[in-house]
Length: 359
Ligand SMILES: *Cc1c(COP(=O)(O)O)cnc(C)c1O
Image (cartoon, rainbow, N blue to C red; front, side, top):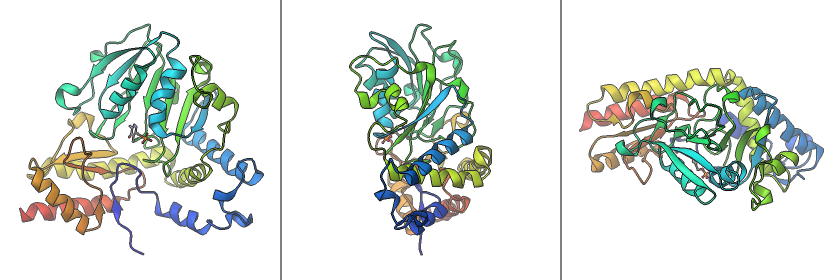
């Protein structure tokens, strides 16, 4: 079997062990005589999978009782609308930090439902940094404060949770969920599309503080209401059953890696390997400010677009794929999510060194 090292930003690589287990169970899940894909979502055999997945997620993240976990289709982008619909209130307002493409898209979507205040922006330096707490212009009457915890395209990550004086915090953790331990009690809502760090595409996980349920504006589609989804235990309609099963397998794998503290250490080791090389290289340089560097998405350039392209195809020849930066920024991006083995990062750094030696 030949596998590449896949640095795609999403959908992204999954642990080999998880894929092999899913493969082994594909036609007959634990003697049930069926594939998980074929099961009724109301059947006992499927409900066991569902309940264990949800319980493992709660355990891994240490989610307190005051929060519910929702599995919702539509990915992270669906949440860009669901958040204001559920939390803004009629004629309400919200604060958004614009630290990149996805935060900006979320703010634009929210504008349809109320007044948006851009509390901070990193646009002046092409989103290469994260604004400091002192730079946040927060409205104490906002319905919520929104930020994107890891900026997948620009390779920056918030290293602190903002202080909002009681205004609920909503955060998009699509590209760093479960990459490290977090204190869930600091947030009102955490959401994440699962296709970066958790599962195949097709779903978002939403962690919502229960006192925020039931605030949706009247025109909110039933399928988007956090309250309805919570009451119906994520089964108001057919859930993405197979994606949830895969999420369950990934969470079991994560527990074997020492949980979130264990994976954080492994991720830090991988990121250090790559960033240390970027700092010493005379050809490549990292795009993000050092203090803001993401442990999940490393963006870098040579400063010469043609040479960037040369490197991307050179790396591809060595089985290192999807290293091109997002189409809006160019350059290179190595997404080194939980499932990227350290061997993949070592191979990448070796390839960069070899390439540097040839130019
Ligand atoms: C990938 C990504 C999204 C978009 O996710 P979809 O599931 O495709 O809607 C949103 N936010 C962040 C931070 C992302 O990385």
